Image 1 (tube, helix red, strand yellow):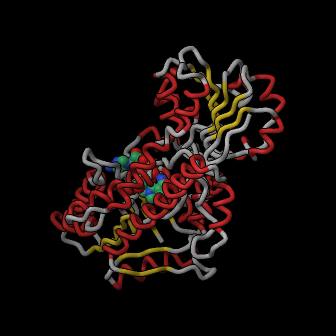
Image 2: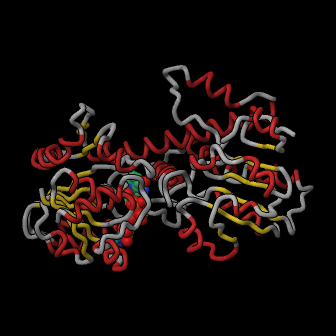
Image 3: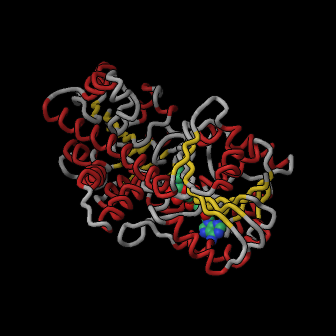
Length: 436
Ligand code: NAD
Protein backbone atom coordinates (compact mmCIF):
# COMPACT_ATOMS: atom_id res chain seq x y z
CA UNK A 1 0.00 0.00 0.00
CA UNK A 2 1.12 3.56 -0.58
CA UNK A 3 1.00 5.58 2.58
CA UNK A 4 1.76 9.10 3.60
CA UNK A 5 2.48 10.24 7.17
CA UNK A 6 2.18 13.96 7.84
CA UNK A 7 4.24 15.00 10.87
CA UNK A 8 7.48 13.10 11.42
CA UNK A 9 7.98 13.36 15.19
CA UNK A 10 7.94 10.56 17.77
CA UNK A 11 4.70 9.07 16.48
CA UNK A 12 5.06 9.91 12.78
CA UNK A 13 8.58 8.56 12.37
CA UNK A 14 7.80 5.31 14.19
CA UNK A 15 4.52 4.92 12.29
CA UNK A 16 6.14 5.58 8.91
CA UNK A 17 9.09 3.30 9.57
CA UNK A 18 6.96 0.46 10.94
CA UNK A 19 4.52 0.63 8.02
CA UNK A 20 7.49 0.47 5.63
CA UNK A 21 8.78 -2.56 7.52
CA UNK A 22 5.83 -4.68 6.33
CA UNK A 23 6.41 -3.70 2.70
CA UNK A 24 4.37 -0.54 2.29
CA UNK A 25 5.70 2.47 0.39
CA UNK A 26 5.81 5.35 2.82
CA UNK A 27 6.37 9.06 2.34
CA UNK A 28 6.81 11.10 5.52
CA UNK A 29 6.03 14.81 5.32
CA UNK A 30 7.25 17.43 7.77
CA UNK A 31 7.45 21.22 7.68
CA UNK A 32 10.77 21.12 9.50
CA UNK A 33 13.22 21.25 6.57
CA UNK A 34 16.19 20.48 8.79
CA UNK A 35 14.52 17.33 10.10
CA UNK A 36 13.61 16.20 6.59
CA UNK A 37 17.18 16.80 5.44
CA UNK A 38 18.63 14.74 8.28
CA UNK A 39 16.14 11.90 7.80
CA UNK A 40 16.66 11.82 4.03
CA UNK A 41 20.40 11.51 4.59
CA UNK A 42 19.92 8.55 6.93
CA UNK A 43 20.06 10.26 10.31
CA UNK A 44 17.39 9.27 12.83
CA UNK A 45 16.15 12.40 14.61
CA UNK A 46 14.86 10.85 17.85
CA UNK A 47 16.21 8.25 20.25
CA UNK A 48 13.95 5.23 20.24
CA UNK A 49 15.32 1.72 20.90
CA UNK A 50 15.22 -0.49 17.79
CA UNK A 51 14.15 2.29 15.44
CA UNK A 52 17.48 2.94 13.77
CA UNK A 53 17.83 -0.59 12.37
CA UNK A 54 14.36 -0.58 10.83
CA UNK A 55 14.81 2.96 9.57
CA UNK A 56 18.11 2.19 7.85
CA UNK A 57 16.79 -0.98 6.25
CA UNK A 58 13.66 0.62 4.82
CA UNK A 59 15.46 3.73 3.67
CA UNK A 60 17.97 1.55 1.84
CA UNK A 61 15.22 -0.57 0.29
CA UNK A 62 13.56 2.60 -1.01
CA UNK A 63 10.33 2.12 0.97
CA UNK A 64 10.80 5.21 3.12
CA UNK A 65 10.95 8.77 1.78
CA UNK A 66 10.90 12.23 3.31
CA UNK A 67 9.73 15.55 1.97
CA UNK A 68 8.58 18.98 3.06
CA UNK A 69 6.18 19.16 0.15
CA UNK A 70 2.69 18.02 1.19
CA UNK A 71 1.27 17.79 -2.35
CA UNK A 72 4.19 15.67 -3.49
CA UNK A 73 4.07 13.59 -0.30
CA UNK A 74 0.44 12.59 -0.60
CA UNK A 75 0.11 12.38 -4.40
CA UNK A 76 0.21 8.58 -4.65
CA UNK A 77 -0.98 7.70 -1.15
CA UNK A 78 -4.14 5.70 -0.52
CA UNK A 79 -3.97 6.48 3.18
CA UNK A 80 -2.74 9.72 4.76
CA UNK A 81 -1.92 9.62 8.47
CA UNK A 82 -1.93 12.86 10.43
CA UNK A 83 0.67 12.52 13.21
CA UNK A 84 0.73 16.21 14.00
CA UNK A 85 1.13 17.96 17.36
CA UNK A 86 -1.98 18.65 19.44
CA UNK A 87 -0.41 20.72 22.24
CA UNK A 88 -2.46 22.30 24.99
CA UNK A 89 -3.93 25.65 24.02
CA UNK A 90 -3.99 28.52 26.49
CA UNK A 91 -7.12 27.20 28.19
CA UNK A 92 -5.82 23.60 28.35
CA UNK A 93 -7.94 22.29 25.47
CA UNK A 94 -6.15 20.55 22.59
CA UNK A 95 -4.89 23.01 19.99
CA UNK A 96 -6.22 21.70 16.69
CA UNK A 97 -4.61 24.33 14.48
CA UNK A 98 -1.96 21.92 13.12
CA UNK A 99 -4.55 19.27 12.25
CA UNK A 100 -7.11 21.64 10.77
CA UNK A 101 -4.40 23.60 8.94
CA UNK A 102 -3.16 20.47 7.18
CA UNK A 103 -6.78 19.35 6.58
CA UNK A 104 -7.43 22.63 4.78
CA UNK A 105 -4.34 22.16 2.62
CA UNK A 106 -5.40 18.58 1.86
CA UNK A 107 -8.83 19.75 0.82
CA UNK A 108 -7.23 21.91 -1.83
CA UNK A 109 -4.97 19.23 -3.27
CA UNK A 110 -6.89 15.93 -3.14
CA UNK A 111 -7.53 14.62 -6.65
CA UNK A 112 -8.72 11.07 -5.94
CA UNK A 113 -10.22 9.01 -3.09
CA UNK A 114 -8.05 8.86 0.00
CA UNK A 115 -8.45 7.79 3.61
CA UNK A 116 -7.32 10.56 5.97
CA UNK A 117 -6.46 9.18 9.39
CA UNK A 118 -6.29 11.12 12.65
CA UNK A 119 -3.44 9.40 14.45
CA UNK A 120 -2.83 12.38 16.70
CA UNK A 121 -4.64 12.44 20.01
CA UNK A 122 -7.65 14.64 19.35
CA UNK A 123 -10.86 15.50 21.22
CA UNK A 124 -14.21 13.99 20.36
CA UNK A 125 -15.61 15.70 17.29
CA UNK A 126 -12.27 16.34 15.58
CA UNK A 127 -12.82 13.82 12.77
CA UNK A 128 -16.05 15.64 12.05
CA UNK A 129 -14.20 18.97 11.94
CA UNK A 130 -11.46 17.56 9.70
CA UNK A 131 -14.11 16.19 7.35
CA UNK A 132 -15.88 19.56 7.19
CA UNK A 133 -12.67 21.50 6.52
CA UNK A 134 -11.60 19.17 3.73
CA UNK A 135 -15.08 19.08 2.19
CA UNK A 136 -15.13 22.88 1.97
CA UNK A 137 -12.49 22.76 -0.75
CA UNK A 138 -12.68 19.27 -2.14
CA UNK A 139 -14.94 17.62 -4.72
CA UNK A 140 -13.51 14.08 -4.72
CA UNK A 141 -14.72 11.43 -2.26
CA UNK A 142 -12.65 10.81 0.85
CA UNK A 143 -13.02 9.28 4.31
CA UNK A 144 -11.76 10.51 7.65
CA UNK A 145 -10.91 7.81 10.20
CA UNK A 146 -9.93 8.07 13.86
CA UNK A 147 -7.07 5.70 14.63
CA UNK A 148 -5.50 6.81 17.91
CA UNK A 149 -1.98 5.69 18.67
CA UNK A 150 -1.15 3.85 21.89
CA UNK A 151 2.63 3.41 21.47
CA UNK A 152 4.82 4.24 24.43
CA UNK A 153 8.03 6.15 23.92
CA UNK A 154 10.95 3.92 24.85
CA UNK A 155 9.24 0.79 23.48
CA UNK A 156 7.49 2.45 20.56
CA UNK A 157 8.73 0.08 17.86
CA UNK A 158 7.59 -3.03 19.76
CA UNK A 159 4.30 -1.39 20.60
CA UNK A 160 3.71 -0.51 16.97
CA UNK A 161 4.78 -3.84 15.53
CA UNK A 162 2.79 -5.84 18.11
CA UNK A 163 0.06 -3.59 19.46
CA UNK A 164 -2.16 -4.79 22.32
CA UNK A 165 -5.00 -3.56 20.16
CA UNK A 166 -5.68 -1.31 17.20
CA UNK A 167 -8.63 1.04 17.49
CA UNK A 168 -10.29 2.14 14.28
CA UNK A 169 -13.14 4.61 14.38
CA UNK A 170 -15.11 4.82 11.18
CA UNK A 171 -18.52 4.11 9.77
CA UNK A 172 -17.24 3.84 6.20
CA UNK A 173 -17.03 0.25 4.95
CA UNK A 174 -14.49 1.26 2.32
CA UNK A 175 -12.15 2.88 4.84
CA UNK A 176 -12.65 0.03 7.31
CA UNK A 177 -11.49 -2.51 4.72
CA UNK A 178 -8.39 -0.49 3.80
CA UNK A 179 -7.43 0.07 7.44
CA UNK A 180 -8.03 -3.60 8.28
CA UNK A 181 -5.75 -4.72 5.44
CA UNK A 182 -3.06 -2.26 6.45
CA UNK A 183 -2.98 -3.41 10.07
CA UNK A 184 -3.41 -7.14 9.41
CA UNK A 185 0.34 -7.94 9.56
CA UNK A 186 0.60 -6.31 12.99
CA UNK A 187 -2.14 -8.35 14.70
CA UNK A 188 -1.28 -11.81 13.43
CA UNK A 189 -0.99 -13.11 16.99
CA UNK A 190 -4.66 -12.40 17.42
CA UNK A 191 -4.62 -9.09 19.22
CA UNK A 192 -7.84 -7.31 18.38
CA UNK A 193 -8.56 -4.62 15.84
CA UNK A 194 -11.47 -2.91 17.52
CA UNK A 195 -13.80 -1.13 15.13
CA UNK A 196 -16.07 1.53 16.55
CA UNK A 197 -17.62 4.85 15.73
CA UNK A 198 -15.15 7.72 15.43
CA UNK A 199 -16.25 9.56 18.58
CA UNK A 200 -15.73 6.49 20.73
CA UNK A 201 -12.31 5.99 19.15
CA UNK A 202 -11.35 9.57 19.91
CA UNK A 203 -12.49 9.25 23.52
CA UNK A 204 -10.80 5.85 23.97
CA UNK A 205 -7.35 7.42 23.71
CA UNK A 206 -8.09 10.11 26.30
CA UNK A 207 -9.76 7.57 28.59
CA UNK A 208 -6.71 5.28 28.38
CA UNK A 209 -4.17 7.98 29.18
CA UNK A 210 -6.32 9.54 31.88
CA UNK A 211 -6.83 6.16 33.54
CA UNK A 212 -3.09 5.50 33.56
CA UNK A 213 -2.37 8.97 34.92
CA UNK A 214 -4.97 8.32 37.63
CA UNK A 215 -3.21 5.09 38.57
CA UNK A 216 0.06 6.99 38.96
CA UNK A 217 -1.39 9.82 41.02
CA UNK A 218 -3.28 7.32 43.17
CA UNK A 219 -0.08 5.45 43.98
CA UNK A 220 1.74 8.70 44.63
CA UNK A 221 -0.87 9.64 47.21
CA UNK A 222 -0.63 6.18 48.77
CA UNK A 223 3.15 6.76 48.97
CA UNK A 224 2.62 10.07 50.77
CA UNK A 225 0.33 8.31 53.21
CA UNK A 226 2.90 5.54 53.70
CA UNK A 227 5.47 8.09 54.77
CA UNK A 228 3.07 9.75 57.17
CA UNK A 229 1.88 6.46 58.69
CA UNK A 230 5.20 4.61 58.69
CA UNK A 231 4.20 2.01 56.08
CA UNK A 232 6.33 0.90 53.11
CA UNK A 233 4.86 1.61 49.68
CA UNK A 234 6.81 -1.26 48.11
CA UNK A 235 4.99 -3.69 50.35
CA UNK A 236 1.64 -2.06 49.74
CA UNK A 237 2.29 -2.10 45.98
CA UNK A 238 3.05 -5.80 46.03
CA UNK A 239 0.11 -6.44 48.29
CA UNK A 240 -2.41 -4.80 46.01
CA UNK A 241 -0.76 -5.66 42.67
CA UNK A 242 -1.24 -9.38 43.21
CA UNK A 243 -4.98 -8.81 42.96
CA UNK A 244 -5.72 -9.49 39.31
CA UNK A 245 -8.38 -6.80 39.25
CA UNK A 246 -5.68 -4.25 40.08
CA UNK A 247 -2.70 -5.76 38.29
CA UNK A 248 1.04 -5.40 38.93
CA UNK A 249 1.83 -2.83 36.27
CA UNK A 250 1.88 0.92 36.59
CA UNK A 251 1.81 0.90 40.39
CA UNK A 252 5.24 2.39 41.00
CA UNK A 253 5.20 5.67 42.91
CA UNK A 254 7.64 8.39 41.92
CA UNK A 255 8.00 12.08 41.28
CA UNK A 256 5.04 12.40 38.96
CA UNK A 257 4.21 11.70 35.37
CA UNK A 258 5.56 13.88 32.58
CA UNK A 259 5.96 13.58 28.84
CA UNK A 260 4.05 15.01 25.96
CA UNK A 261 0.93 12.90 26.51
CA UNK A 262 -0.39 12.35 30.04
CA UNK A 263 -0.25 15.98 31.20
CA UNK A 264 -1.83 17.42 28.07
CA UNK A 265 -4.34 14.62 27.56
CA UNK A 266 -5.67 14.69 31.12
CA UNK A 267 -5.99 18.45 30.85
CA UNK A 268 -7.71 18.23 27.48
CA UNK A 269 -10.22 15.67 28.76
CA UNK A 270 -11.04 17.91 31.71
CA UNK A 271 -11.57 20.73 29.23
CA UNK A 272 -13.76 18.58 26.97
CA UNK A 273 -15.83 17.68 30.04
CA UNK A 274 -16.23 21.35 30.98
CA UNK A 275 -17.44 22.08 27.48
CA UNK A 276 -20.37 19.74 28.07
CA UNK A 277 -20.90 21.13 31.60
CA UNK A 278 -19.40 18.16 33.37
CA UNK A 279 -16.98 18.59 36.24
CA UNK A 280 -14.59 15.61 35.99
CA UNK A 281 -13.62 15.62 39.66
CA UNK A 282 -11.20 12.69 39.64
CA UNK A 283 -9.10 14.09 36.82
CA UNK A 284 -8.87 17.52 38.42
CA UNK A 285 -7.46 15.80 41.50
CA UNK A 286 -5.08 13.72 39.36
CA UNK A 287 -3.61 16.89 37.84
CA UNK A 288 -3.38 18.55 41.22
CA UNK A 289 -1.55 15.62 42.79
CA UNK A 290 0.85 15.37 39.85
CA UNK A 291 1.67 19.07 39.89
CA UNK A 292 2.83 18.78 43.50
CA UNK A 293 4.50 15.43 42.99
CA UNK A 294 7.07 16.76 40.53
CA UNK A 295 8.66 18.68 43.39
CA UNK A 296 8.08 15.95 45.96
CA UNK A 297 11.79 15.66 46.73
CA UNK A 298 12.37 19.35 47.24
CA UNK A 299 11.08 19.75 50.82
CA UNK A 300 13.15 16.68 51.76
CA UNK A 301 16.27 18.22 50.22
CA UNK A 302 15.58 21.58 51.87
CA UNK A 303 14.98 19.98 55.25
CA UNK A 304 18.21 18.00 55.04
CA UNK A 305 20.19 21.17 54.27
CA UNK A 306 18.43 23.28 56.93
CA UNK A 307 16.41 25.22 54.36
CA UNK A 308 19.49 26.76 52.85
CA UNK A 309 20.40 25.54 49.38
CA UNK A 310 22.44 28.61 48.49
CA UNK A 311 25.87 27.56 47.30
CA UNK A 312 25.00 23.85 47.49
CA UNK A 313 25.92 21.68 44.52
CA UNK A 314 23.81 18.75 43.34
CA UNK A 315 24.29 15.88 40.95
CA UNK A 316 21.13 15.02 39.03
CA UNK A 317 20.81 11.65 37.30
CA UNK A 318 18.06 11.36 34.73
CA UNK A 319 16.49 14.14 32.70
CA UNK A 320 14.16 12.39 30.26
CA UNK A 321 10.57 12.13 31.48
CA UNK A 322 11.06 8.36 31.53
CA UNK A 323 13.85 5.92 30.61
CA UNK A 324 14.75 4.89 27.04
CA UNK A 325 13.76 8.14 25.43
CA UNK A 326 15.37 11.53 24.83
CA UNK A 327 11.98 13.22 25.28
CA UNK A 328 12.04 15.86 28.03
CA UNK A 329 8.62 17.39 27.52
CA UNK A 330 7.12 18.06 31.00
CA UNK A 331 9.95 16.07 32.58
CA UNK A 332 10.01 16.32 36.40
CA UNK A 333 13.81 16.84 36.20
CA UNK A 334 13.26 20.23 34.57
CA UNK A 335 11.12 21.35 37.50
CA UNK A 336 13.78 20.16 39.94
CA UNK A 337 16.49 22.05 38.05
CA UNK A 338 14.40 25.20 38.10
CA UNK A 339 13.68 24.94 41.82
CA UNK A 340 17.28 24.19 42.81
CA UNK A 341 18.85 26.93 40.71
CA UNK A 342 16.24 29.42 41.90
CA UNK A 343 17.23 28.54 45.47
CA UNK A 344 20.85 29.41 44.65
CA UNK A 345 22.19 25.89 44.15
CA UNK A 346 24.21 24.62 41.21
CA UNK A 347 23.49 21.37 39.39
CA UNK A 348 25.57 18.94 37.39
CA UNK A 349 23.37 16.66 35.27
CA UNK A 350 23.71 13.37 33.48
CA UNK A 351 21.31 11.51 31.20
CA UNK A 352 22.24 8.82 28.67
CA UNK A 353 20.18 10.40 25.85
CA UNK A 354 18.39 13.57 26.85
CA UNK A 355 21.22 16.04 27.53
CA UNK A 356 21.18 17.73 24.10
CA UNK A 357 17.45 18.37 24.42
CA UNK A 358 17.87 19.79 27.93
CA UNK A 359 20.69 22.04 26.74
CA UNK A 360 18.29 23.31 24.10
CA UNK A 361 15.77 24.30 26.78
CA UNK A 362 17.76 25.45 29.83
CA UNK A 363 21.13 26.19 28.19
CA UNK A 364 24.07 26.47 30.54
CA UNK A 365 22.28 27.01 33.84
CA UNK A 366 23.47 23.49 34.67
CA UNK A 367 26.68 21.67 33.78
CA UNK A 368 26.48 18.57 31.61
CA UNK A 369 28.58 15.63 32.73
CA UNK A 370 30.07 13.38 30.12
CA UNK A 371 29.81 10.36 32.38
CA UNK A 372 27.31 9.66 35.12
CA UNK A 373 30.06 9.54 37.76
CA UNK A 374 31.60 12.85 36.62
CA UNK A 375 28.42 14.59 37.70
CA UNK A 376 29.07 13.57 41.31
CA UNK A 377 32.34 15.46 41.81
CA UNK A 378 32.00 17.67 44.89
CA UNK A 379 28.24 17.34 44.94
CA UNK A 380 26.46 17.74 48.27
CA UNK A 381 23.95 15.08 47.25
CA UNK A 382 22.81 12.91 44.38
CA UNK A 383 19.24 13.29 43.11
CA UNK A 384 17.68 10.65 40.84
CA UNK A 385 14.82 11.72 38.59
CA UNK A 386 14.58 9.01 35.88
CA UNK A 387 14.81 5.24 36.26
CA UNK A 388 17.32 4.49 33.48
CA UNK A 389 18.57 0.90 33.86
CA UNK A 390 22.15 2.12 33.96
CA UNK A 391 21.42 3.83 37.30
CA UNK A 392 20.04 0.70 38.93
CA UNK A 393 23.27 -1.02 39.90
CA UNK A 394 25.83 1.77 40.11
CA UNK A 395 29.29 1.55 41.60
CA UNK A 396 28.43 2.68 45.12
CA UNK A 397 32.10 2.97 46.10
CA UNK A 398 32.58 5.45 43.30
CA UNK A 399 29.49 7.36 44.37
CA UNK A 400 30.84 7.48 47.94
CA UNK A 401 34.26 8.69 46.96
CA UNK A 402 32.94 11.39 44.63
CA UNK A 403 30.10 12.88 46.68
CA UNK A 404 30.94 15.42 49.35
CA UNK A 405 28.15 14.06 51.56
CA UNK A 406 26.84 10.49 51.42
CA UNK A 407 23.33 11.60 50.53
CA UNK A 408 20.93 10.31 47.90
CA UNK A 409 17.42 11.57 47.13
CA UNK A 410 15.82 8.97 44.90
CA UNK A 411 12.65 10.00 43.08
CA UNK A 412 12.25 6.58 41.45
CA UNK A 413 12.88 4.12 44.31
CA UNK A 414 15.78 2.47 42.49
CA UNK A 415 17.49 0.95 45.51
CA UNK A 416 16.54 -1.26 48.43
CA UNK A 417 16.32 0.84 51.57
CA UNK A 418 18.09 -1.85 53.63
CA UNK A 419 21.03 -1.87 51.20
CA UNK A 420 21.36 1.90 51.43
CA UNK A 421 21.30 1.64 55.19
CA UNK A 422 24.11 -0.93 55.12
CA UNK A 423 26.14 1.20 52.73
CA UNK A 424 25.76 4.16 55.04
CA UNK A 425 24.02 6.55 52.70
CA UNK A 426 21.49 9.03 53.97
CA UNK A 427 18.79 7.81 51.62
CA UNK A 428 15.35 9.28 50.99
CA UNK A 429 12.94 7.92 48.44
CA UNK A 430 9.19 7.92 47.77
CA UNK A 431 6.83 6.31 50.26
CA UNK A 432 9.56 4.54 52.22
CA UNK A 433 11.25 5.35 55.51
CA UNK A 434 14.44 7.43 55.17
CA UNK A 435 17.62 5.88 56.56
CA UNK A 436 20.82 7.17 58.12
P1 NAD B 1 6.11 15.64 17.78
O1 NAD B 1 6.08 17.03 18.23
O2 NAD B 1 7.24 14.75 18.15
O3 NAD B 1 5.97 15.57 16.19
C1 NAD B 1 5.13 16.37 15.43
C2 NAD B 1 5.79 16.65 14.09
O4 NAD B 1 4.86 17.36 13.27
C3 NAD B 1 7.02 17.53 14.18
O5 NAD B 1 8.09 16.90 13.51
C4 NAD B 1 6.62 18.82 13.46
O6 NAD B 1 7.68 19.45 12.79
C5 NAD B 1 5.58 18.32 12.50
N1 NAD B 1 4.67 19.32 11.97
C6 NAD B 1 4.11 20.39 12.60
N2 NAD B 1 3.31 21.07 11.75
C7 NAD B 1 3.35 20.42 10.57
C8 NAD B 1 2.75 20.62 9.30
N3 NAD B 1 1.92 21.64 9.09
N4 NAD B 1 3.03 19.77 8.31
C9 NAD B 1 3.88 18.73 8.50
N5 NAD B 1 4.48 18.48 9.68
C10 NAD B 1 4.22 19.31 10.69
O7 NAD B 1 4.73 14.99 18.31
P2 NAD B 1 4.46 13.47 18.69
O8 NAD B 1 4.97 13.18 20.05
O9 NAD B 1 4.85 12.62 17.56
O10 NAD B 1 2.85 13.50 18.82
C11 NAD B 1 2.02 13.64 17.69
C12 NAD B 1 0.61 13.31 18.12
O11 NAD B 1 0.52 11.94 18.55
C13 NAD B 1 0.10 14.13 19.29
O12 NAD B 1 -1.28 14.36 19.13
C14 NAD B 1 0.32 13.22 20.48
O13 NAD B 1 -0.57 13.49 21.54
C15 NAD B 1 0.02 11.87 19.87
N6 NAD B 1 0.68 10.74 20.55
C16 NAD B 1 1.96 10.85 20.99
C17 NAD B 1 2.58 9.77 21.58
C18 NAD B 1 4.00 9.87 22.08
O14 NAD B 1 4.41 8.99 22.85
N7 NAD B 1 4.77 10.87 21.70
C19 NAD B 1 1.89 8.56 21.74
C20 NAD B 1 0.59 8.47 21.25
C21 NAD B 1 -0.01 9.56 20.66
